[in-house]
Amino acid sequence: MECQNSGKYLIALIAQGDSDAFRKFYNRYFQKVFQFSRYFIKSEDLIQEIVSDVFLNLWNNRKKLPEIENLDSYLYTITKNKTFDYLDKISRKPEFVRDLPLGILTQESNPEEILLTEELEQTINSAIDELPEQCKLIFLMSREEGLKYKDIAQILSISEKTVNAQIVTAIKKLGIALNEHFN
Image 1 (cartoon, rainbow, N blue to C red):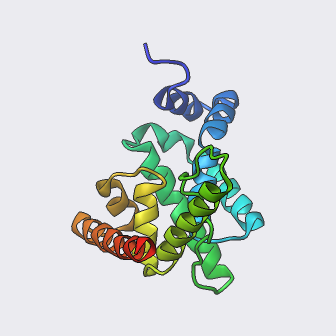
Image 2: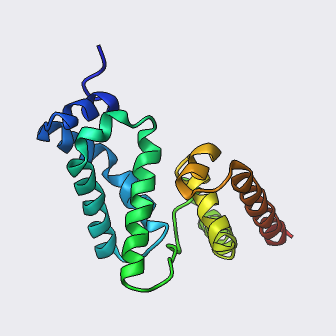
């Protein structure tokens, strides 16, 4: 018997129209969907609309949910498509969030260490911001979201070799930026 809180178990209940299971599913995946939309746009209000549309789409197509093999990829793909739909509607190119947390800050108490850490984080964020759009998106999907190359390729409709090449490019450029920072 599957755990009552597992994604597959919740999906099976949602497919049967169980609104409590959908609420649990929503609470579990809201933040992932929200954060992924932030890679494309800055507007919190627009992100809220996109997230609502993603989950509305899931509810409206709930009978098909048990057929999904990779739930995370499915959610990211729907989110990407909804985000691009909104961007098309408002006729602007995708933007990326600037100061995404990289989680490198630690519990420093020394002001000098705090300053050095902030400078390092600023260097990393600047280097990421200077990456070409697709390279930046792929890098953030891999490093921030922890997605596998195969999943990124599927979500973005590109080859795994392209994903790998973009990650290598991003790492090289970040390495150059860090090298300059420390020299």
